[in-house]
Length: 135
Length: 441
Ligand SMILES: [Zn+2]
Image 1: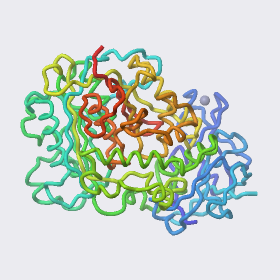
Image 2: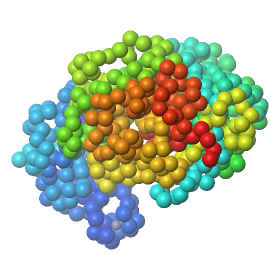
Image 3: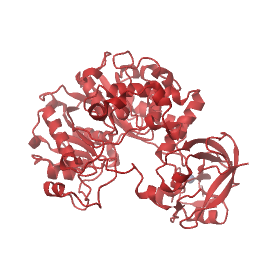
Image 4: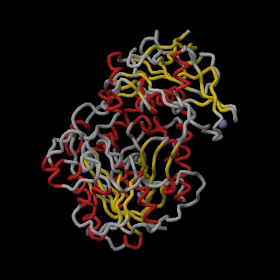
């Protein structure tokens, strides 16, 4: 599915660069040993600025979903209806990402299904983004 | 840019356990004014947001019996909920009639800043205090209540106007772009916005408590029934037939984002409204029965990751309820009028259950709605009809609560006791709340 290309900024660049190398990384606070996503310049919990990045397994679970029929986002409208699933990471279920669930028909989603990350090109800049497929 | 600043964070009572609000009963609402309502702007001067804003202010002042020269404060929620007009050329009669504010050609067209209001409302010559409560009239009401309590103003207007120009709502700017930057880099590629968040949360709720979307129907139909008794509302004035939907119409409407359908969404409109707030001492001498402010509080929830989980939504609304009751000194059984927010309808149950109004606990809202929630019945929940019954303003619940307490809600007047009331908006995570009473004590 065509998607908007994310524009990396100073804080998010390591995440998007890793995607371009087909790797999934999550920001990690070295002080309180906690993952944080989306990334920020400091830890939301302990305010530490010792923030690093950890590569994660790329496995997750479908936490929940909805089915978009009338999106405001122009680039997505041609593919309606489509799933928007909330994925929780195996490495830390508190960390959530989104997915259109390639390979799963709209509204044929089974909550709790195990999913694996893959990386998809976006048109405008070629920036890759994480997507998730049921295994 | 207008000169007026957004209220500082210190104005908002966001924390729990702050005790009873220090100005409880010392501040009151004394005037209500609504302009006429329209579906869209037809580019005439007389339907512009600026014109409607002036009308609403004049009505609120007239309602209170206060002259514009007596007003010393203006708190506005400076932008409405629709797309801006500029860079389209400003219609000539608008440009010739109103004094613009520096740097914002949309001021008066997609909302009205406090500066625009001071510039253009005849007789507002003695305003010494202006502040902005952005994004929601409930925010501006909170700001004005605290400001008047703190003595920053004695007689303060609280105002918002909202515009709706042509084109499909929300499908401009970042939504129409090929790239996503800032916070939207994490969401827009997948189409995650507020609608999916609310639809996803509602699906989680139904799974947790064994409910389903059809069980929203009694609430939606009752919101529309209440709207049919709200003369200030959009549907009452323009499309009364749209309020006559049946359960069948509701459950068969097209999905926007399943499980959210068309009738779970509120209709964007063009209108303006204003309230007048003053000290309890001054309120006694004004035309209407004062509606005393017993508390204000706010929710500024922080989520753990990208989404607001159901657990977080429930924790946020628990916190809202705690702050509502702690700051007002009321208990759930002492709260008569309950007007939480309904735009989108699929989050209203969280507020009702958090507040435990009429004993409703987590997971019970949908069954409660299947009972008698009519205004003339024993459980007149959301007596305003909300945005769903009146159009997108986020203000009907405030106006209705005030009118119920004053005994001038007309056909919507509840038959149960109406001595205290609650209204607020917007989301479980980010919202502002007002508690009112007929007595300052
Ligand atoms: Zn930390």
